[in-house]
Length: 182
Image 1 (cartoon, rainbow, N blue to C red):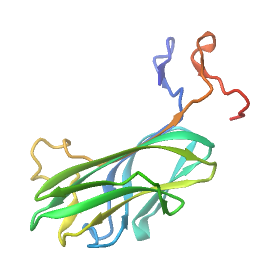
Image 2 (image 1 turned 60 degrees about the vertical axis):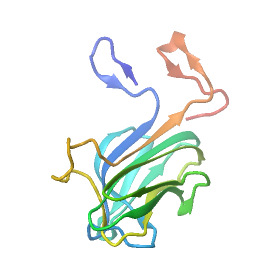
Image 3 (image 1 turned 180 degrees about the horizontal axis):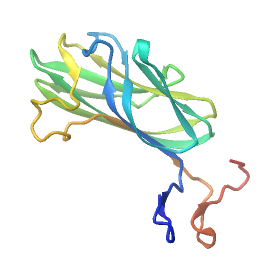
Image 4 (image 1 turned 90 degrees about the horizontal axis):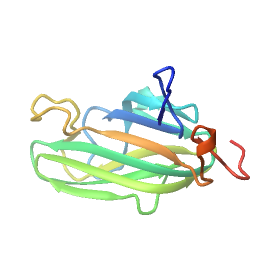
């Protein structure tokens, strides 16, 4: 991002989206099944993305409008009060898991699991995030009262475009794409 010198307004120089507050159907993740997540908060979004939500089915996907290389960051906070559990997270593109995007954790109360992956996305691709657990009482730990120091355990996802053409410092730090029209 860059700061507007005269206006004091932050202007995105690189397309990105950040969403947070993951939820799932019924509050608990389904045991031994991949659960697709929905997100409550759209923190920041440029015009290169659209967050599409199906609230009836608790499904949320990010629609990508520009072809290119992207950095996808995903973290989720999980809580299991009754037993110890294993959790696996994955990044999906067009309902297919991205190879190498899996992260796992074993926990007895709270667990923060993070994934980060460079992915080449095409225009009109849809990205979503899924979780698999083996416990019966695993829930997403966002804004629960029994978590010490609220907001330490928090779920969010971010997709950032990676410019591959270089920077032109003489044009106000605008991205220069050689041979690619955006």
